[in-house]
Length: 92
Image 1 (tube, rainbow, N blue to C red):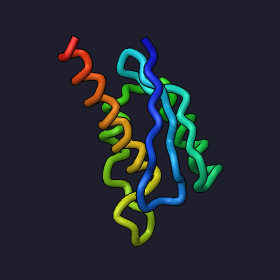
Image 2 (image 1 turned 90 degrees about the vertical axis):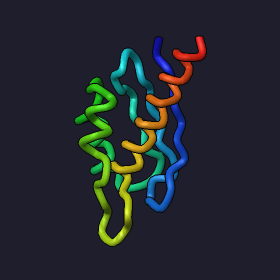
Image 3 (image 1 turned 180 degrees about the vertical axis):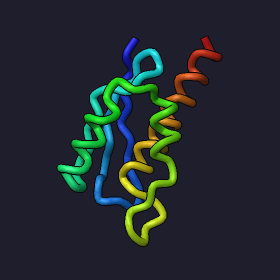
Image 4 (image 1 turned 120 degrees about the vertical axis):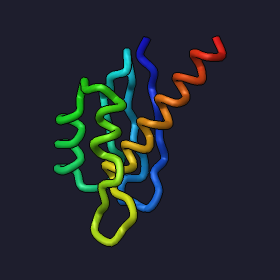
């Protein structure tokens, strides 16, 4: 079953990231705000990939002097979504 996630970002130009996870894979990534060309490229590159591997690759990526980036925020959102899915499965 495909689950939809909506993540409010911190300290980046993108204000919100939406995506779906189905069978551990990430789909339909939409960044709201930020650098449209770069973020569209990230979304296309990771479409259909293993969510946790994607998070590992993007985690810690920085934007200039900031401690985070839009890619890093996506990684954080994916990890939170996967943790929520895992907790949900345990509760069932």
